[in-house]
Figure 1 (cartoon, helix red, strand yellow):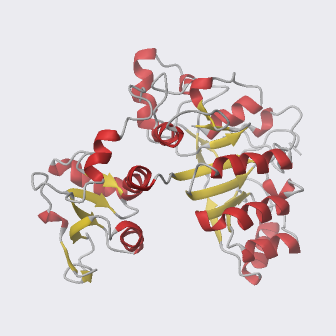
Figure 2 (tube, rainbow, N blue to C red):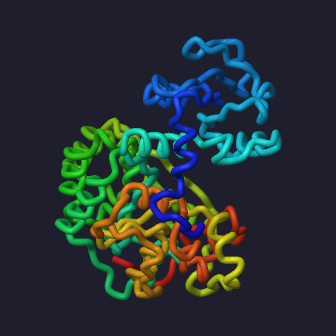
Figure 3 (spheres, rainbow, N blue to C red):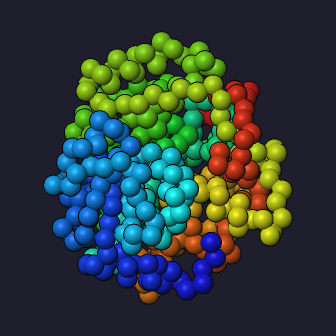
Length: 384
């Protein structure tokens, strides 16, 4: 989306959302709904609740009888807040009924972002990734962080990372997911210092604090203690079908369970193929903005005091594969009026050109791209 009124793109809809007389229905009555009600239920007029789960229908949430979604009517003058993780499915049903996205229905988090920003000057953001190191224990063909293309892989400077984190949280009050990755982040020597610093200062403003690993390195006792103390979630990419390290993977799982650490294993034999750099996208300028809007990359990358809209581009720049473009990032160090609102707009998908330039060479996420490759197929040599 192209900026038309930078810093004011949401002014009109915010007036409606923040109006005490605006009426709301919530769709979904589990944890997300309770969290939303606890955060701002006392400030908005929720008149009804629906849920697709027939077992919930007829029960109550905050004195409201939970009804069947069939009762929703786009002409009834209320706004629907989708308070379920099944947003895609609910979105389709609401569109079929005649509701309009970000006008008469909202994803709960987007509503929260607009409401908190305009009502309380509090900036909420969904995700931030920091690739601490360019080193990895694997050399995967089609790695979406382009690790095999780093000729001299290196680590980020610890003090620079901490300074950038401070810069980010001087503006952002709440972050849904803070992610440390690589390469392989367990190769990053000062990882414990990064975790301690961020957790001690900002853990109460981070919903999910995650570390992404391929499971080939066992964390030491100090890291395990920090994982437990600060409720760090370990997201393990299991590539044991392509690379023989099942024994080490099991050792890691046993260690995390023994230490009572939350972890998730993502196992897949297929990856999405972003194409770049061997098979880059080729798209005309008139199709670039619709392509960008449909892709909706969710991963923001922090690097050099800049938040890049697409973290794949961040890594491509670091690997020397792609030229930096000011259109594609938000400069945290730059002083500007309405900075929080401008950042929210950028995070939402607004920029000067209407699309990030990297879309010209990247084939995009699975919303626009059906290309796949075998997961974790190894190239010669190691990137460590």
